[in-house]
Image 1 (cartoon, rainbow, N blue to C red):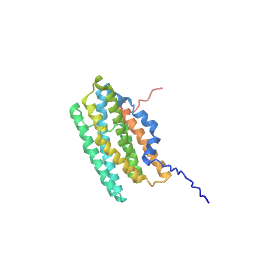
Image 2 (tube, one colour):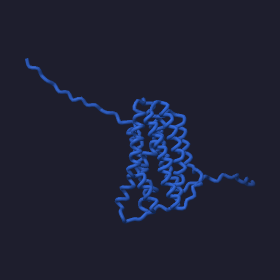
Image 3 (cartoon, one colour):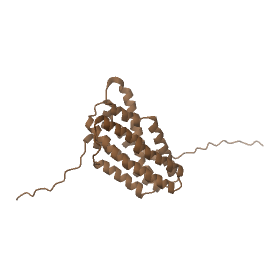
Image 4 (cartoon, helix red, strand yellow):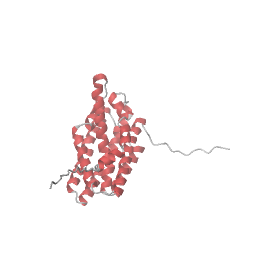
Length: 250
């Protein structure tokens, strides 16, 4: 009796990680953001200095709230037994408050900027949204809400480095623009972003479809707000002057 041997090919389809799912869901929006006129003009040297000054002041205001949110997430992670992740997220809060703001302070000094401005409309919208999600929703949703700030800055930083290399010495730009590009396109920031992505994937790995859908919504909203943040700077957006209208005589 001859026994036949059969070979079976088993194909295992791996589901994408949660963060890959979120990124893919926002891919079209991110593709537009990476070509934002404000960012491109920073690299090709055509961005006027006033929108850049406006931007760095508003970004410094944003970073204060961002660091507060990271620390709150650190507390929530510790309370849920994620001690290692809690420690790293708190370190990232220090990085936002000290390292990133050190860049801003250097630019303030170089350009003679007084950092006493109030939060402009899109700054307040962005910080209020992320603070609400972090404070009132489960820790995984809060982590995802902050993810675009890390990931998109790293992504556009790399894109800006590529464009700068392509342009070479054909254009000039203020040194403060190069300092910004070097910071967010650099290796140190890349390591921070990858650490944060790993944390999000680990905390979200057992989430059900309903929870993942909510997280995806938070991610997309923050991506929109990132884009609007640069819109605001490009347009030098201000709060409207709201005054009483004089009644017209009939």
